[in-house]
Length: 237
Image (cartoon, rainbow, N blue to C red; front, side):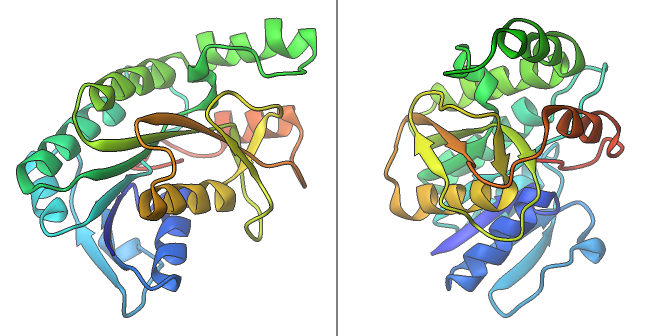
């Protein structure tokens, strides 16, 4: 399968490219900084493009079988538009070139329901503080992105992970079409779920939760890294 990955130079995007190419797929890795892209190989083609440039997006999508969006930015007080603008250009290009399959990342908080089995402090204080204050502009644009995807007639799947962290390998993660127990998703598991949804298509026109159940970090470690871990870039998912 020919797969184009937007947000390829983010932590999750790189893993998607690695896993997809290792599985034998031809991957077009889209990045604004191709010289800094670390994943190379005979099945990987690095494409310079900015999702704010519709012509560049169209060129990247042309000739592909499927699209994976791993776009993301860190928390910021500024208005965020990379999700909604990027997915607008991506879906327009897909429609023009007859590319049907799309898998995109947002967040588990967009289910709008508390995590099953969570303590009262997390449900009523900690998570709402992240959603309404620290990550408000990010989640607002994720919602806009989901609305844009839902309005298309593409074969889409939106993957909604929990708090993201790094792990050495894919685990025996859980997946479901409603919010799952637990707080965290390893990027390796998220990348694997995105690739599986893209290739096998088990959940079309669905919102899918992915949850890692082993080796997870603490809540405060995760928030500290998300809040202070880096400057706004092309992809942080």
